[in-house]
Length: 168
Image 1 (cartoon, helix red, strand yellow):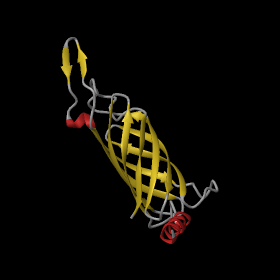
Image 2: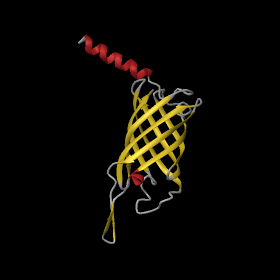
Image 3: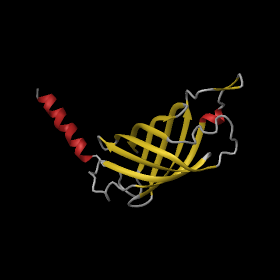
């Protein structure tokens, strides 16, 4: 019984010390599921703190089960270039501005990718100093896909992400 109570109190101690954004020099990594119209996939992103409330990072995503399209009895299947996307991003980490607890962060931001210029809004919650969960939604502001075809909307529409995040 003592071991169980010790484990519970130790876990609570970790919960109270978790911090979602530490400012300059902070490094986050996120791995999650990407959900959009026409398919789902995986996404990996990271953020580097460059100021008290600012960070920049990179995002790579790949649609695993992108749906094919049939037009005039011809079946088209998405190629690698239709499924993959890469972006750079800038975030305003405003959890402390909003008065949230240290283990929570809200981050609106802008991103520039291979298919569009867009915006995103995300939320992180850390259970411990190194592990948490996140969710994020993104929209394109200006689309500039140079190969618009039947798969032009893949990675170029409203997307939702959910997954795990890590302090590095």
